[in-house]
Image 1: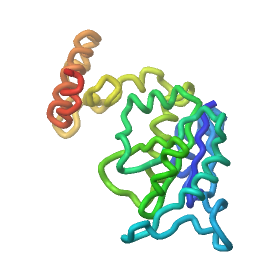
Image 2 (image 1 turned 180 degrees about the vertical axis):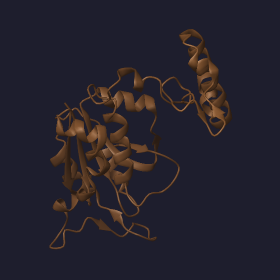
Image 3 (image 1 turned 90 degrees about the horizontal axis):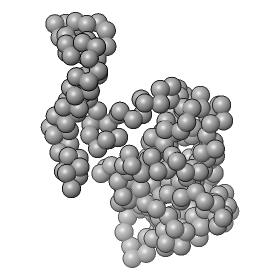
Length: 229
């Protein structure tokens, strides 16, 4: 079973949207498992402090290495085979290739940071892999963790109804997905392309491929450049 353990200061944010639709149904059926752990349980002192002022000065607060180490060790002992992820805007961008790799594995332990981030020493000390979902800043790692889990869970066997539906989407072949159409045939003077109504699967496949390339060239030329490398 694919198992996710979330270390967070806000466990009530989970499962959130993952408790609905396909992911929620799969969670209820035991296809995957979600565990949340409150970092503050390992906090220091009477007030369970999890952060302190940054060394060298500066604004904000930094999450303490000793607190996070205790939280990680309790959630994922040394023999836990799951990768240890830290959601971070400075991490490597999450790609569909990485998502597929994670989905094939046993799951993940995901640390959701807050404030100005974490003490750098915890990253090396506990082998954390920093992962980013985009070049922007969120209030914390929870929303990023939800996005990562959603991307993984939908690829698990038994989650999506059509096995091929996950193979013809954006990024699966290094391209954005081709345009999709359905009834009505005519919508405000805009008609479904005739080739899609022809029944000629070979021509349909060629059209979809050409449209995917055209869209990718217009919107994400960087993806095409990677395919050509």
